[in-house]
Length: 334
Ligand code: TRP
Image (cartoon, rainbow, N blue to C red; front, side, top):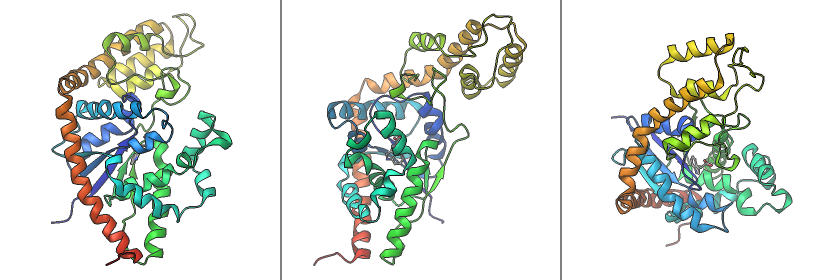
């Protein structure tokens, strides 16, 4: 039998997950776990690179993100969820990888560049933050996966991982790691409720999977639409209108969405009406997720047990990978 392909994916536990995470990667993980062997990393060490002053926040969000995973249907029978900081081999592998990457290459990583600008770090960016893509390459390769299903913003990380993999294999003359393929969902990024940038916690424009129905409705009613759509009778723009982008993503009734789009474009359909409809669509979508989440939340010990069991499995895998690494490098001492 051909070996099942291996997947590695994950998130920084800095807050609960939102709709952007859902369309960007959670949706793929739920589907892929049936066909592949899937590892999901709770990347707390990476989260610390910009939250080192608040480890409590990172600690507490490990459980929150795990709850989101279980709530959307990531099944611990099929997927192995684990905690990054409990796999010291990832830190060890990072140190070896750091020799294979230049500082200038790291400062050119587009995702890191954007984050540094957004956070206003400038020259005072820490070494830990600048090198987190290398640590992510270690997260990824520690289980020797073939596939990395991620949102679009993570593509530079996968590219950098493959550069490291190629460099490592060539240098130490052994195919220790396979190159990885990224897998981007059809809607790779979701705009935030402000219609300006992608949905993210730091932009304050997110709808969370754990938001209650009233919160979702309130956020939707405050959403950005077409700024030129002043009167109900005015024709409105459907394109780049976050309300319609969300309807495309979350309303299974595509015929109805098309009808609303046509009506809005013609004029005569008010923002309040489409927003109320969207709120209803989102709440219908989120309701079963919320219910499952609150069920799991009643038993946090069971949830921790699930991720600690997953972590134990990865500890074994990581130990074997590091044996291969050290053997290829010729640094085994007996
Ligand atoms: N960098 C990812 C994010 O910010 C989280 C992450 C850490 C990750 N390690 C990973 C994603 C490995 C995929 C694979 O969301």
